[in-house]
Amino acid sequence: MGAAHGAGLRILLVLSTLMSFASMSTDMYLPALPTIAKVLHASSASMELTFSSFLVGFSAGQLLWGPISDRSGRRLPVAAGVVLFVIGSAGCALSATVWQLMGWRVVQAVGASAGPVLARAMVRDLYGREHSAQVLSTLILIMGVAPLAGPLLGGQMLVYASWRGIFWSLVGFGVLTLLLLRLLPETLAKERRADDALRNALQGYTALIRDPAILGYALSGGFFYAGAYAFIVGTPFVYIEYYHVSPQAYGLLFGVNIAGMMAANFINARLLRRMGSERMFRLGTWILAASAVVLLLDAHFNWGGLTGLVLPIFFYMSMNGFIVANSVAGALAAHPERAGTASSLVGAMHYGSGILSAAMVGWFADGTPWTMAWIIGLAGLGSLGAALLAAHLSTKGVNNELRNPQ
Image 1 (tube, helix red, strand yellow):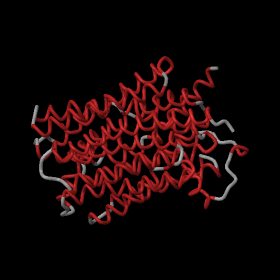
Image 2 (tube, one colour):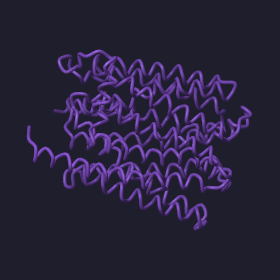
Image 3 (cartoon, one colour):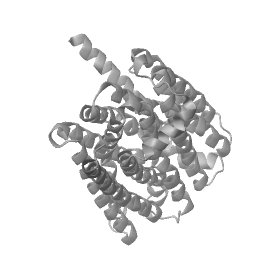
Image 4 (cartoon, helix red, strand yellow):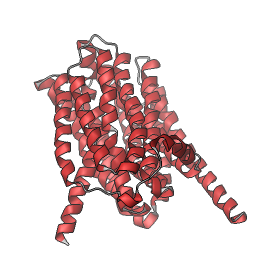
């Protein structure tokens, strides 16, 4: 019993590490964005595109790794992804221009995307819907250390090293993860692997996206991430340049939101058995929309200054704990036989939405917090609307099946 418990904890440790790749890749270099812009003689809009380029690679990569893992198992693809992440991170550290940095960020992102998409699939391999939602919340709670520590470490590296040191530390993180993969067993047995050709993956995605349940969960989570990435890209310039917050203090303000996410994931894991993942998911989207509207009003009328932004953003970002794990668990429960492909689709839609929102922060920047705020405001309302629409379509689909049984 003790040995099995210890093995379970080791698996949780490795899976949470894999799920933290996106946070580590984005959050650590946030405090350095203004510094990198000066060193590479790049505009703030160009620096925001280094973020968008990461999301392009991260979204496209997820569409690749899922079908591959459904055919070949989970361990080999995730190891290949980590190796690619190490190569991309080294390229970022050696970049001499912002365009080189953008290119290597895409390589880094394609490798990093293997971590979360295959970690989610592994959870679904091992557990049912309610239990998988609980495990995912636990994983997000554990991996909360990464986005919490990321900006703090990045800010300190600017004091004692340079922005290039941030990317070299990511190289070290990737190498350490490769060593940890030895603790991870294969979760997809050979008899459960897909036997169709990889070229049929597009047809599989087409079939999945026609499912209103998967589409609703993916869109609702996607809108949440659109707002989250608008916050991630926008706040370094809003907090540091507009409100003159130091890079070190920025790390603390950023970390407050991660603490909120961790607390919400803890609450979600505790209440799941009593309330169910569907109710927790809907509650999260309502709170998300309300906080987004408050942020919109605060920014428009300049209510509360910096505090008027920090507080509603805190509640918005905290809803990660109610929305992400429950939406992923709900989507994967609909097609457990293709957990890797479904995880890829949901992940690509989640993070793909950030490509547009992150770019919009740069395109519509006016030197004030307003651009970031209205993008987050629309994202919060969109998340709620998608959740309500998905509930309506799912209920309609169930009623039609009852009226017209096969």
